[in-house]
Amino acid sequence: MGKPMQVSRYWRHFREKYRLIGGKCENGHLLFPKRPICPICGSRNIEEFQFSGKGKVITWTIVRNPPSGFEYYKPYPLALVQLEEGPVVLAQLTDVEPEEIKEGMEVEMVTRKIREFDEDGLILYGYKFRPIIKSE
Amino acid sequence: MRKVMKPMKDVGIVGYGAYVPMYRIRNEEIGRVWGVSSFPIEEKAVPGLDEDAITIGIEAARNALKRAKIDPQKIRAIWFGTESKPYAVKPSATIIAEAIGATPDLEAADFEFACKAGTEALQAAIGFVGSGMAEYAMAIGADTAQGRPGDHLEFTAGAGGAAFIVGEKSNESVAYFEGSYSYVTDTPDFWRRQHEHYPRHGNRFTGEPAYFHHIINAAKTLMEELGLKPSDFDYAVFHQPNVKFPLTVAKILGIPKEKVLPGLLTGRIGNTYSGATMVGVSAVLDIAKPGDRILWVSFGSGAGSNAFSIVVQDAIEEKRDLAPKVEDYVKRRKVIDYALYAKARRKYIL
Image (cartoon, rainbow over all chains, first blue to last red):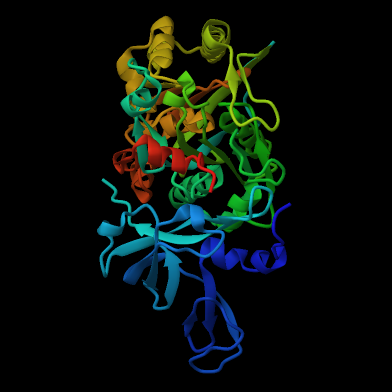
């Protein structure tokens, strides 16, 4: 049997995790994640906002001693990414080697596997960022 | 008795998109480990640690949406063909639908028919749109295929996929369907039992009575019933478990190699199973001209073939640049050794 998991806790955030859906308050402040109260102006009138997924790496680190559930993925890069619309997101980078990561590197959101709860549990998917694919 | 299938309304492809993971393992490297020195292909695509058939399907679906330029809320079905579904019980299609913003007003299900599950989903999408039940339907084929370590399938079992959005034929269609056909028999050339990690196959039995028999019958019947000759086609994409088989089919049908090579990716990414012909057709659409006719024949073990004839339209010129092309993904490559490949395929017990 797997360890207990809180299915509802993850399920509640699928839209945010799969698609980068955040919030926009009545005064135009953009929030990620979406919150009940705008931290900038205090407005409670907040609607959903779809972020483009494009952004830049502000800073990053390489996780070599991950928390439980992430052991198989080590080492992996964890970064602060500033979305082109403004908000900053903490997320893993993927499809990139540590030595290729640079401050200001342009990245795009992809939906990837975040973790699995043992062999018999839920598979969690969510946003990560990777270098933008060059098209010819 | 008419065998070729045509829907009541003419339908076309309004958007297509492919995806191939960036990691590659060379066939020489697999051969080094298992003492093999002749190889079916050069290298194959390996999914990253955080990739599976669902994440491949999501990126392919997003690329198809970019080219279709439609509101995902108008999609009435997402049918996902794969034989490497991450959950034995729980639909993959719902996860993809949620990730592209197509929920909740739609059909969603996973299709399974070895390597032709994706084109089987496409046949259903043609019928669903062609009957007028749906404005748009999406068919996806994606796999992260596994071969038993040391088995000759390990040299070719790749990863990748593609998605096609079907809609009523219009100026927005990058190509339209002239007709389709399906040829199926009970032929046990390849299978995997419940709870088994790896498939088994009938060795040489997989060639003549399975692959060649079904593909050639499907292609010939489709051409006969549509009144077309091999020379009427500008490109042909056949299921590609290796490089040799599809080229042999072309030779038997009298189709020159040059018409097959643009859609033959297996040598560089491996056999992407349910994705194979769908990635191949995507690569052809990336370069085709309006008016070009494409012969498209899949094969799935077990066994059967789906055959389609599609004609490229003007919209391709404007739409192909709206998402990364197959070649962009094929060129984005990082070669890994067998140890990292084994890690990526989760062979280590922590």
